[in-house]
Image (cartoon, rainbow, N blue to C red):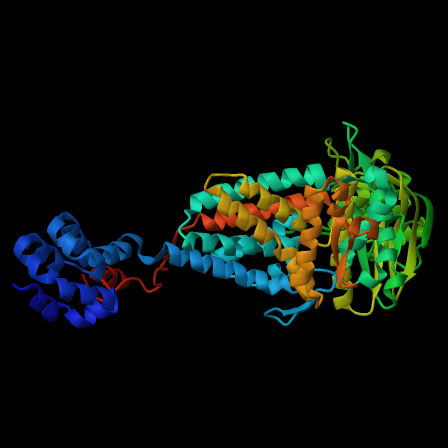
Amino acid sequence: MGMDGWMHREMGMDGWMHREMGPVVTREIKKNQVSDHLPSRRPDLLLAAACATSWSSYHTACVKYIIADAPLKRRAPKVCDVWQKQLALGGERTSGAEVRSQNVMAAVAVANVVKSSLGPVGLDKMLVDDIGDVTVTNDGATILQLLEVEHPAGKVLVELAQLQDQEVGDGTTSVVVVAAELLKFAEQLVKDGVHPTSIISGYRLACKEAVKYIQENMSLATEELGREAIINAAKTSMSSKIIGSESDFFASIVVDAMNAVKRVTSKGKAKYNVKSVNVLKAHGGRASESRLVDGYALNCTIASQAMPKHIANAKIACLDMNLHKARMKLGVNVVLSDPEKLEAIRQREADITKEQIGKIIASGANVVLTSQGIDDLCLKYFVEANIMAVRRVAKEDLKRIARASGATIVMSLANLEGEETFEESNLGFAEAVTQEPVCDDELIIVHKPKAKSAASIILRGANIFMLDEMERAIHDALSVVKRVLESKQIVPGGGAVEAALSVFLENFATSLSSREQLAIAEFARALLVIPKTLAVNAACDATELVSRLRAFHNASQTDKSKESHKWIGLDLMGNGVRDNVNAGVVEPAMSKVKSIKFATEAAISVLRIDDYIKITPNQEGGGNDYHSAVQSGAIQG
């Protein structure tokens, strides 16, 4: 039986081939006359094909034969390749230059979204999600987090921005732009015949040398510059945000807030926790009406207006439990023969509640904070005892107040013996707890807790979009100040570090005689994307400014008398260059180091990919073969 005839008669050769295998396979089969060889050389294949219950099982028989038959494999290499891809993987496969080009294209597309928001005059993005919520921001991590990026290589850059945000807090846009540029130049090198492994080793070497150069030549110790350097680092972080015009005011608030939450570890190192600074938003008023509170601010109010609004020498009880009238547990039935005893049961329930509240009052507590509810009966007892009670406190806030005041969060009054007690040792202490009016609302403020210092920033703004963006700007500035205070190292901003590294790495590349030379030279070129983008976003002549910047840094590295030129960076407002250390444009050294490391690792991880396999999802209705039909009940077996 001829194979062509059998296929036409049993399965429909042209339709089946075009539908399942594609025109490429059909063309190769006809050209190489594979079907003429199958039946004559392997009669058992015809039996396997005739018994096939799906096209995939027919594939299996064909591929086994073609791979085993060397002359036939040489005559039909393309058929073998296409069949093997579809047979073994059950999905789509892209290899080599094509997949690398797709990955680079996806990474560059993601970087282009945030590129225009880089720098002190970067533009904002308006993002609207699927339920209509609007976000207006120029924070790189926020923009990428809200984008629904589907391409795997694009997701690498989104995760890269989030990593930079967690580790440093600032520089999220820069790290994505640099990573995309490194990939773009690496792809060009691959097209020119350089192997990806050589590029990867070159990038690693360039990254190592760049980090070493920053630490040895571009860093300044903050001890020499004092508080002014820390404030300048905060102002530089805010310069590209919505509060850039008020950066002097907010920078001072941020530095004071971080100094307020300073703690010293057992090894004598100072640590600053950004989460210890609570940021609250209040509608109305100008941004300059924002203020720093020496204590912890809560977005809550007292449970009853009959309670005092100011408690001095506060003893704080932190509860994670409901304060309500005692009730029988669900499923418990009480059967009474005497109706008069019903009132006694109700009275006993009220007495149990009174005893519980009495134990809290007896401990000396004059402020009660609970993460759950307080009913009217309990409020009555608190009002009579002149105690301030606050309900529905967020658990995160409750934990922070307990940590700051030295309180213990109590989840139940029952002790190990089964009795109900409330120990005085569970209380926390603060200088005062007050309720203060802010805008149209009121806030509870815990002033000067005794165990650990705390700080809160109350932001004022015109609308919710502005307040959200102000909160993101304050978070970035707090993170920058934390890194400066802990590492005590700063570097000049305005593209100075990138320009210096570009000149240094170009000279370093020429000193190598290995294949990595090309990759290091491209790494140096890629770093220039930061000063170029800064100049473009500021509507300046990027080519001229970057050329002047490189000339200054080249002079600083070749002429000892001009070493001070290494601090020179871009002056985007004046459309020129200047000494950015004297101008107060500085950044944490850690921000630059981490940015280069993360960008290099992300670029390398994408560059290593040379095969993209997308598995085809299974159909919900099952296959079209005999066994699936029997299982689904479509036919009777």
